[in-house]
Length: 95
Image (cartoon, rainbow, N blue to C red; front, side, top):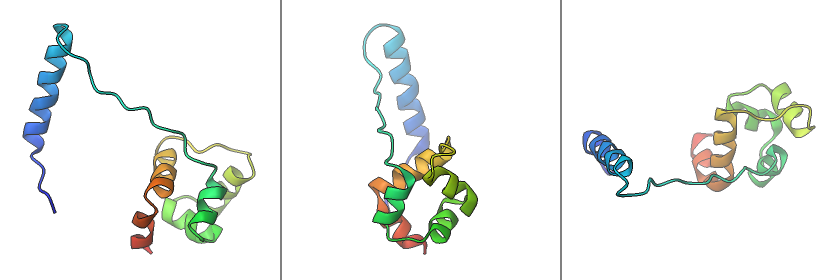
């Protein structure tokens, strides 16, 4: 396990902002892709609705609403779906 130096990371970030404000650099940005539909991700992970909802920390009803298009995932749920799709091994370690 690599130990992070959060103080150094914060100072680096502050210095990066200062350089940007002085016109001497560009801030790093990342475009995050939208995750695939929840049902597709769940099927790729070979999980039941109950198990997948449990891993995401949502009710089965919420997951069913997402899968049937009645509601859209929001905020942290989108981040969890992105992780489930791009790093499924993380979910393998949870159950």
